[in-house]
Amino acid sequence: MADELNLQRQSFLGADSETVLHRSRAAFVGLGGGGSHIAQQLAHIGLGHFLVIDPDFIEDTNLNRLVGATLEDVRLGTAKVDIAERVIKSVNPSAEVVKRLASWSEVTAELRDVDVIFACVDSLGCRSELESFARRFLIPLIDIGMDVHESNGEFSIGGQVMLSMPGKPCMRCMGLVTDDALTKEAERYGAAGGKPQVVWPNGTLASTAVGIFMKLVTPWEKQKATPLLLEYDGDLQTVTPSNKLAYLPASCKHFDSLHELGDPFWTTDALAAVE
Amino acid sequence: MRTILKLTSTLYDDLVQRLRKPHGFAAERVAFLKCRPALSATSLLLLAGGVHHVEDGDYVDDPSAGATIGRSGLRKALQTAYTEAVSMVHVHLHEHRGRPGFSRTDLRENALFVPDFWNVQPGLPHGAVVFSFDSAVGQCWIPGSSSPSGVEVAIVGSPMRCTWKVTNG
Image (cartoon, rainbow over all chains, first blue to last red; front, top):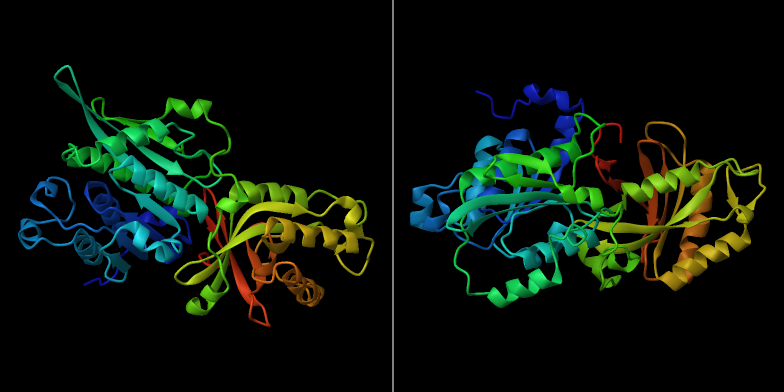
């Protein structure tokens, strides 16, 4: 019986692709409906190093969308990072899984080491802070989000997948994060109940995010640039490049200062700790 | 501890374009990446945010080297390190594919002038990197160490290019 992944069927990704994937590191901030999907796919693909971060334990309301979770997990109150580790290891036992039952802001030293961060978080404020962090350490961030809107008694499903690439337009450039929206979110803090979430839009968004990641690390073609923002229309079942892309600046004006890079509290004393 | 130089592909493409521009007499061009340092759990990161270009008039006509920076050019680089509080990484390009290497002259000169940046920024690491079209190697002088350590390079863009991930890196 095979005890390691056979990646023969994805050899079109390039002669070095298996090595590159094996040496690549991705962080997953949030292992709920979106992050669990992405982590599972990257386990199948042969990613070598996973940093899974989530402070939460599974609840019964998560079971409709958290990939790999079971009723037994709900009964036991299993940590979401433990479920992620189990799923990843069951596919690829040789993958390194570093799990942190914590908020991402508590594990920033480890986050600085990854090649790509997947942001699978609910709040706009968290998205914005995570993007600021990723820009500071020149880490591409792939953000996914979905929402269900009610209008005139009917519902619409929408969402987006964004590649926040250092040097390129950011969430503010794209209008996904605004001061007004952050203020409104802060005013609602604690008042909102659980947002509607279902498995299939998460799956579509997660698969799109994985496609963006693969294009970054093992591009199978180099002529077509990955759109930085893709919009999901869950009613029409489509994912299309955003119309906003036509109006974006070529570079980002929100994160363009040299002094927004690196450790703001740099001292040589810290070197001894890493040695 | 690993040392990783990270720069965006936009910055890299601009840098390479400038380094390939012919000079009146120098066989190659050089520049300095302006970096801010950070520590991760495992590595020292040098995060490049800009380029200090060496002006045409600051090269010295020296047939024994591909490019030699004159006293004025070095003084300007030191001034940039001081006023902008940045780590300086000297860069040049070998126009071929595959893993490049420092020449003996490069190694000797690196050891002489890179630690000079500690005269103006003693608390910051400084270094030197040589790029090829698809790879790079480098040296970094870390405060407190007398000898340089190796540098790996990550070009952050689409696609990502990291010297330690490919078999010929």
